[in-house]
Structure formats: C-alpha cells, structure tokens
Image (cartoon, rainbow, N blue to C red; front, top):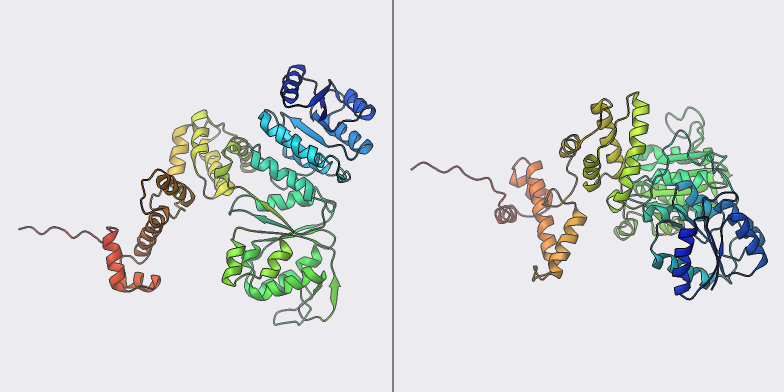
Length: 480
C-alpha cells in the first residue's frame, strides 16, 4: 500500500517507516500538517497516518482537510496525549481509527490491513464538529479512561453520537452508564436540546406510567392537574431510561408501542402526541436471561439494541485507576471545601490491586472518605489498607477475598492443570452451594427450619449439607 506518514517527530517517523516498509508498504513522510495535506492532494495514497499534536495544522485539521478533498481516503490518527474528547471528535470527524502511542506494531499493521480492505468503499461523510469544548458539562463528571477498552468505547460514542437510533448501554452497577449516555447526547446533533434521565428502578410501579407518559387532570385519584411526562419533556432531545430491566411488564408493552409508533398518549387521554426523541437505555441486568425467564419482552429488547455499548468493570481496566483517582480527589476536595491530598505510590498500588466490585461508584466513595480523613496530608498505604479492610463484602464466593469471576478463573485454571479430575463445574457448584448455606444460616440466625423453607429442601438435607461443609455449631466437650 502507498502510505502517507505525517509526524513532526523525525525519530518516531523513521522508526515507524522501517516497520511499515518491512511489512511491504511504501511510505512517503511529511514533517508537518501543511506538507501532509499538500502531498495528499497532489498524489494518490491508499492511507494516511497522522499525528494529532503538531505545530501548525494539527491532526484533526489535517483529517478535516483531507476528508473534504478525498472523502474515500482513510486517515488514522495517532497521539501520545489521548483524551476522551480527542477520541470521540476524531471518530466523529471521520477518522478510520485512533491509536494511542506507544502502540505495538502488530496493532497498527492490523488497522492498516482493515483500512486497505475498505479503502475503495464509500466512506461516511464528515460529521459535524460540535461540542468539542463543552462536551463535559460543568454539572457532570468527565469521562476518563486511557485503557484500550475505554478508548474503543470513546470511538464507538463518536460513531453513534449523531445516528438517530436507540443505544443500549450495558454494564455492572457503578460503571458510569449515565456518563456514557450524556456523552452520546453532548456529542450528537441534539446537544442543544434537553437530556432527560429517568431511573426506572427508583420509581414505584404505580407511578412509572404517569412519570414516563404523563397524565391528564382527573385521570386517577390525586391527578389534580395535567402532568407532562418524561417523553414530552425530552421532545427534540434525548431520553435516557436507566435500569430499563426493572420496568414492569405492563409498562414494557406501552414503551414498545411508543418506540414503534413514535407517539405517546397521556394517561386519561385519547389524543396521541407525535414524538421526536432519541432513546438511550441502560441496565446492569442480563436481558437475554430475563427474556428466557419471561420477565423482559423480546420484541422490546430487539427494538432497543440497534446499537449496544458495553462498559467494562473497573477491575478490567486497572490502568484507569490513577487518572480516575486524581480526578475524583480534585472534585471531592472542591465540593467538600477541603485541601486535596496526594496519593503516595504504595497507596495507589493498593487501590490498583483492589477488585472494586462496586466499580467507579465504590472508588469514588472510598476516595471521598480519604479526602475527609486525610486533612490535606499525603495518603499512605496504611490509610488505604485500613479503608479497604472496612469495605463491605459483596462477592458470593467462599473465599471472601476473591470475587465470583476470579473464583471461576481459579477453578478453570485448576482444571487445566489437572487438579480437578471431575472438572471445574462440580467444584464451582460446591463453592456456590457452600456459600448459599453459609449465608442462609447466618440470616436465619442458626434456625435450620427457616433455612430449609427458604431453600426449598427438607430439614434432613439442610443438616446433611451443614455437616458436609462443617457449618454445624461445635458442641462443648463434656468434662469426664
């Protein structure tokens, strides 16, 4: 392939040229953005690779000029100074991909191969440049993440921001699903309109229909005035339905109708109101499993999942702990009116080693406590160790220091090593059964009849299991 490489760092450009030419590509270098744009206009290239931060024309400006002149020419952006804004805006502006320095040569070569396969296809027109300086409202937390998972997510936000399709955001509790929804809104063509967020799990079932669709005066007892529902409030903007997996079945039916017909009818009215609203939804629940169990409508699921964004749990992107901690400490100190502490290296290492079952929400709560307790002094390992020792146990595994996912990985590793002749599944089932009986016995305060009732087994079975797992209270030894 004929490649145009634009980078003001001569040493980096030379090293990269060697790698690219060794892979069979022909490389033309350009030392700045102006030279790169001129060469791209004068000659035929299969692909352009450009740095983001350069004197004169920056990478985003280079991308825009090349895309305007040759919309089918793929452009890959590189940067050592990655931010959420850059990843999203580069993708929105039409970049084929966006890579963080330093990257592995095989990663770049794989991207080049994909670009070559699509170079002759029609590329999407450049999306409008919007909200680049205001995508993070002062009232909301910024999106933070240097990890590969989050950088990929930011690219997806850029691709989907202006698309008039529903987006389903999946992720564990506390991973920041609403932040992703706000980013989609703020970077989209509805950013100047309303963003309305509704937590479906927090509204009583008797009120949720009125909350979403509105009601007329006298529609039911206590309906003393007309109420405009959330759909109407979000007209021309974005409606974010958080924890949509908690919607009652009766409301799921009506939501499906609204999504299909793009009309809403207030409770107590016969008049339909035409809607122009983008729908974003999120849940921490396993919707396919709920469909199998009959608690979530399959047709609603397929209506919502035109596009899906998956947020990784914090334990899968530990490299983001440091920037997240810095941002949280700054914000917490400002909000509390206290001096901002610094994290010593050993303290940060402990934070990075913790599994964070509550994800970013748990990290934020923990760091706010450190701000309060530290009084502006540096935070050491002892303080973090004490803080983490007080964290509530949220895992299900018998080994209370190992979350369920890690227990699964541990058992699978043991099976691969031949340590579990019967396989990983029986061992895991034993683990979970032991924890089930342990927890039930604790909650029943030792009452075995209650345990039997709750678990749907006989009292004889309960006693056998308690004996098997050595959960029976030890009787005091009688003196001879």
